[in-house]
Image (tube, rainbow, N blue to C red; front, side, top):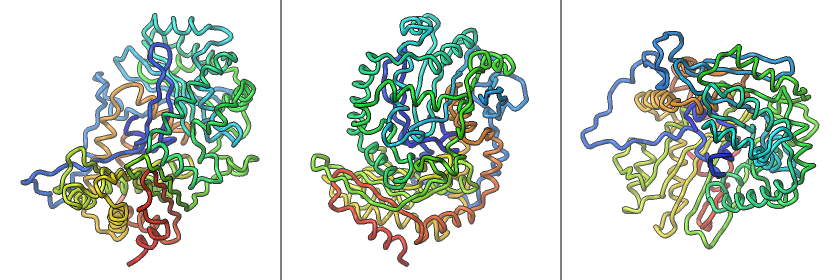
Length: 528
């Protein structure tokens, strides 16, 4: 997952991806789904500059995959052309000169957020069935096409989107769009395939349950979005996985796989007018859907889908005596993708940063929190690691901290949580240096550019942005926005978001007996 999504936000703190045909089916987790600014070690003779970094507008931005001498917008790798078909399908292209390959596919604005209690998990189940054959092509015929032509076909499900895409030579672009259209509109959903994939998904669910961060973040979502489908796990509960049938899958497809819920994106060796014609040929006859955009559905008939989504306070301790680590997530409400506060929240997250004892980040770290975590408790540290996170959705966001402690190292959750609260209060009080602030701006920009190193990450970022905002942010837009934000803007956002009336949630898993209660944490946060 590229850093553009980590700056602009992603649909979920995790994405479940099915890799098809030539690649073994596997789950790729993207828990660290927003920018993770790892604080760098400083050397003994390192001196902080006394003046802020140079103007961000002077930074030369060039895509590492652009080799053309064409000077037109070579730095805006996210700029693109957008058209709309009569049935509401959005067609987006980004031509990258001198490439002979392209990544193309469809974003469907229907992830687990489009589900209800009884069918939670069906969007992910449906994605697993995508490569099992259609009414036009057998599974073997699809596999043969991709194998013989060296293409890769992939799919994944998040909380807000389902995506099918392929990386291919430009000569096969139309055939790829044809196959993806066939998958989306003509899949057979045979009973034997459903039963086979049911077993695969159950094993996948068991694997997720063994990943402590996944457990914590799923429960965190269920608490803070308890009255919204945004709180659903992407895979769904086991009881649903065991009972989802062909009718459930067909009903979900018939309701949600509609033209005006789809964004077709092509990046690389793609000519826009030709691409629009190809998409119109294979997707132009899809019908429209009513109330197709959950983010815009203010008075939905389904209460789970009413937006803006309410954010609730809450706490949950999941004690497991077989687990020696303590895994904790603390979160407050943050900005949505379209909020004017979004970049402020990301800058605040970047200032807090990440730290890991395993990476050898020691007591000379430039972050006060990282330094405290490393030097306390002898050589054992206050924790094994911490990660400042920000997860963004169409109408709401989550901002917080994820902590991992080892009870065998006598690491006390109360102490590290106290240090985290101290760090949060530092930001809200305005104790941020000019250098620290400007450094985080520069890190965000450089990480963004370095992440855009291939057609596939660019495809994913353009698709997610168009799905949510109907357009993309160019790199110039991002730099301009970051430049316009002052230190006091971030301080004001922190102060507003951390006030005593703001909701706060905490989930812990493993050895939880020493984890402080929500009321204790609130008292610590709001005391003088």
